[in-house]
Image (cartoon, rainbow, N blue to C red; front, side, top):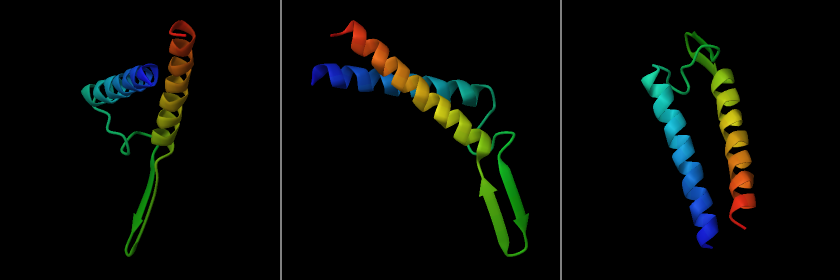
Length: 74
């Protein structure tokens, strides 16, 4: 159980670091270049394409780190 908590903690630190770095660079998730937003009178469509790709990359990187630490701490 301790190993699981350690791995989840490392994953959360990684995600927090990435979000912090993005905000320091002036990028806000949900308002990145490439996110699609169409607003008209009585209608609003919003699809966060770039944000979705970024989150997918973070999840993939987190899983990769999880497996890497799993090999070292067995």
